[in-house]
Structures are given as structure tokens and as C-alpha cells.
Image (cartoon, rainbow over all chains, first blue to last red):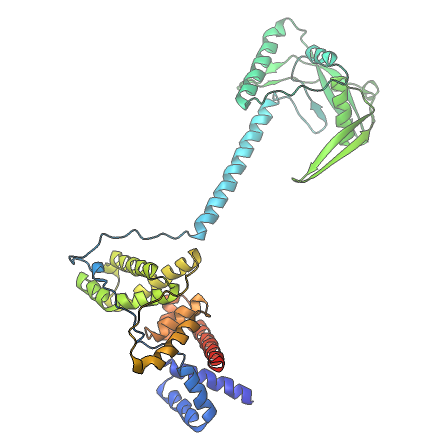
Length: 270
Length: 160
């Protein structure tokens, strides 16, 4: 109780010193201060920590701030403070711009895929006539390492690709009407890779350098395709890659990167 | 506010704003800049500000500039300000010096509240408007600061 009273009186003394009490309340507090020496001591202690006006600071002549005076200075540039809202807005704009760029980039990459028919079940990879692809794989010696290519810009890559496709189209009169395509076929758990004959390479209407082929439906009977039970997408992809490039091995090493730091090499036995 | 009223405010309050800024940021040149900036802002808006509110507007701008300065640069140690000392005032001045030293233990906000209260005589409500705090916050922060100053000075006295 005493502690409560002391805390209350301490607050009242501070309010009194700050001139925040009305006359009646101030009178009551004064009465307590006069009646109790401990409150008087507290009042004096607090009164001593109030700053006084006469602290002898030198007076500065600020007449140059007066407008129209002979000493008036040209207006100074007011320092602008950086507001956090602008920072947040800039961050959001940056994220949006990055998102839009990535989206545009993905769209371009999708167009570069040749506009080939895609579905969940059938994945095709036809960049060049099949005989050309086969010649490439035959030329590669077993165990030979891939020669690093100089870094080329996207424009150059697009140009080459466009020229390649145009050449394929130009030479289409001399090649058979149907073309070979490599396809991964999935039927339930079973899958397989097969070469199937497609229609002629055709330019997609209204597009530039986009071509497509259509596959016969059904592609082949399951027996002809030699479908096997899938061991998962990754081994199948590896197997398909090895089949395409004629690089037949019993095992292969795959490096998987998770995030920026985690890198694991996993050896798959096929 | 007219040009004459604005000039009157310069004469009347420029040194008070300077003292407030100097005690807050402890840098005389920066404090002069704060004064100049505060008056520039006041002049650019003088047509829409009443003469009666000129002083509190000035202190509001000065308070913000001081806080900007505090966030940007750590305030220096208190510069030596020449004081006129007479022998009969010596003990009084000694106490003032202790009190000025004690102000250093306070955070910037508490220090500004003390300066606005003691030097400018603003009440809690007016201080709240200048600093953007509500009345209760002003009261709490001020009382807390007074207790800190009192305890610091009692300890100092005991040591001496």
C-alpha cells in the first residue's frame, strides 16, 4: 500500500512540476509535500533535474533567415529523406520486372522448341531430319569428351536454328514425305522409346520459323513398341538419351543440384 | 502568415530552435542547418500556416530533421560551447554541467521531450503534436526520463 502511495505521489509530483495539474489537484499535492518530509525531498530531487532557461548559450544572429532583409541568403536545398515506401515500391517493381522477363524468356524458349505437338503422354524431340541425327551419333567416338563450345548469344543461336529449319524445309522436296521422329511412349506404368514415322515437316500458319509434325494415331501397337515397366522418369530419360546418341552404358552419373549449395552425384545402374 | 510575421518568428524563435537542435544532436553546424531548413520549410508554406502555429510548426520540422540526422549520423560528443561564468554562479553552473552530462544517458526521443518541456514550456498535448506521440506516451516517456536523470545525479552526488 505504501509503495502504491509512493508511486502515485511520485507521479503527482512530476505532473505538478510539469504544470499538468489543475489548481485543485495541485493544491492537494502541495499539501502532501508540505506535510511529509519524504515527499518534500522527492519534490526537491525532481525539481533539480529540470533544465533552466539561462544556460548561457551564445546567441546566434539568424537575421539572414529573414525575408527581404539585406542579409538574406538564397534558399538552401532541403534534404530529402528516403521514405521506406519508395524502397518497398522499388522492390516490388524489380520482382515484377524479373517475373515478366522470365515469362517472356520461357515463351521464347517454348517457341524455339519448334512448335512440335506436345502432350502429357507423348514427348517428341525432332530438331533435324533423323538421318542427320543418326549421322551425328555415329561420328561420335565412344568415350570422346564433348568439346566445349564458345559462348554464343541467343540471337546467334536463334539465327542458326532458323537457318537449319529453313534448310530442312528447302530440302523437303527431295526427302520422303514422312519423317522419322523419336518418341517416348507411356502407357500406364510401361514406357518405351521408339522411332515412328511422322508426317512431313510443316510450317505453322502465321508463325515465323515454327514447324510441326503430326504423329500417326495410334503410333504403334504396344507389342511393336516393346514397352517395359517404368523405373521412374529419370532412368527413362537417361535411357532415351543414351538411345538417341548411341552412347550405350550400363550406368551413368547424374548430378542433382538442390538450391545453390547442395550438389549430389548419383550413379544410376540401368 | 505574412512576410512580417515570418520575420518576427525568425527573430523570436530562431535561437530557441537552434538550442533545441544543438542539445539534441550536439553539433553546432548541423544545428544551424536544422534551423535554416526549418525556416525554409516554414517560408515555403507560410501562406497556409497561421502565425500562432508558426512556432510549433518550426519545432515539428526541427524535431524531424534532428531525428533524420540521428538516424544518418551518430551524434558527436557534446561540443564545447563557450559559457559566461561568474564566480557567484559557479556552483549553479556546476550542477547545470552535471545535468547536461546526464542528458547523454537518455535516448534521443526522451531528450527531445525534456528539451521541449523545459526550454520551450510546451505541455504534453503540444509535445505530442510536435513529436507525433499521444499525450499518455509523452507523459510516460517524460516521467521515465526524469527518473533516470534523478537516479543518475543522485549516484553522481554520492560519488562526489
